[in-house]
Length: 224
Length: 220
Image (cartoon, each protein chain N blue to C red):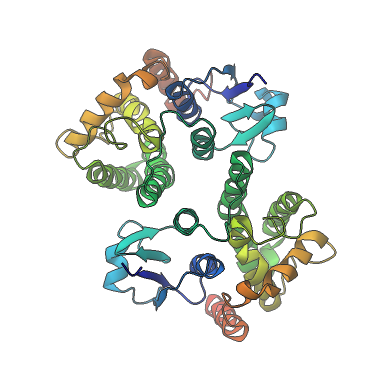
């Protein structure tokens, strides 16, 4: 039976780009459906049907069945298509990859938004939080080329936000989250990551993202 | 080599009880270390979980793992007997989705509803009810979320299966009732009467006393 793989995503979303990278890595052809996520009223009926609870991208549709939440989708992709595994074999290493991926989503990202949108002391506190997280991730990388070792793995993919979006945010806001003096290995990893094959076609156009962020920060709203 | 399995937990924590339940389901022997999570976390706990400084932590042959759902996945992959995740990748993805939904949406909503003063309870209870309604739909008429046997989602829902009813008793808040959520209510009975689950729950009186004390504290 021919496989039907569709991905509902948004051009600027690091979460939906994660899934694209994983599918690319494994050589899985898929149909991409761009969603306007700026407001629920613009989201397609299909997206709302497949993800009624969270109403978000990404949604992976595999032979008609929807899989939700980017990290869960990554695990699903890894279990369904066995070539070029993105998780190591050893249970402890797999577990640590999962742990750090969650750390990125739950601990690293929220203070980035807080720092961007906050002022004064709140901003400083959030900025410091992000820096602590990045320092921790620098330690996790431990001099390796990628978190996954010689090739990118689930944790590298989960860290796509840091490699690309965070650096755009730094440029637009002037806030220094990630610096070469504190996190030299992580900075090097960012460059390696964005230039490697499965990733480079699956990043938003830089200028478009910069314009979008400038627009959003200036209070002109969330427009596509 | 003899396996060394330790669990750093707290008697009243549903999160650390999840880990104990999974180990007991799989017949894994472990040493339990009680942590005083409110006043005095041990240096070992802080060493093994420097990022979150929380229980549970599973120590397996000296290697620590933190975060209850992450630990459950590790347990599943390490000890293959009595699987808590289905085999099919899609079913596994759904189980992970529901476990995440429980932690990210259900528990915070229930906790908020439970501890809101009576005058401010209406909206939090409404939101928590929405969560429970959604969760009930995931049960889909099955005996357990895992089908015929307790699985990862049942384990993740332990708070709803046991702690919630005690909170309701102490606060007078009515969230989960047989009238409103017949299937989910029936599941709570099935869940707590499973022999393995029974052994993994905190003592009822002790937990009731703990909740009552908490209410008294917040009134001060």
